[in-house]
Length: 280
Image (cartoon, rainbow, N blue to C red):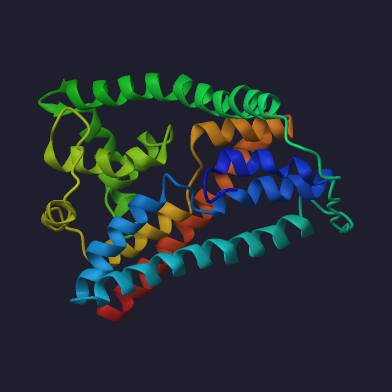
């Protein structure tokens, strides 16, 4: 379920009887790329990985690249699950039993009411609650200047040293941070920063997107680290709020924020360090 929406994946963990294993599943669900991250991954893979090749190989190589990113997420899920089960969530493993209920004719009215009001509106309501104020904050940061420099640029300059160590830049890290309401807006924020515009950029031409990124210093290693960090970074606000609701405490939301983010930072530092050793 996390491939569609991590918040839905967290909610789906309700079927696990063991509280310990339920928490492990909730905390590792964020390693699965959701629908909001797939378009970004596909775009970057198509431009920088598939772009190395020509003809029909382009889409094949880009597809394989995205598949490898997904497999990395699954691998990280298994590793972090093992670490959690041996540290803060120690306990005896239990068997997972899922009983098939007797078949009954679906009650259309009840299905619609539960799916719309109990599920869809709940998730959308939380998303709107966060997205509207976040959109205003992003607009203010991009349009309010201090000494001819926007607040957005000040934030990006602050994160520039860490961004360089991770094989990216300050604007990319700023976009990830401001994109916490929804992963879909990370790329538009990056383009907005590079184009120095006051509103989110909405380009559909991958060639134009690629030109903007390359003009602002993106290379193959930048694209690789961006894809890694797209997979391994904090989940959206809706998912964090859902973790709190399902786990019953904000401390699990904090862990859900920190675990993938630390993994992403460390892996990007290693990838960029190895690349620099090879190049130099």
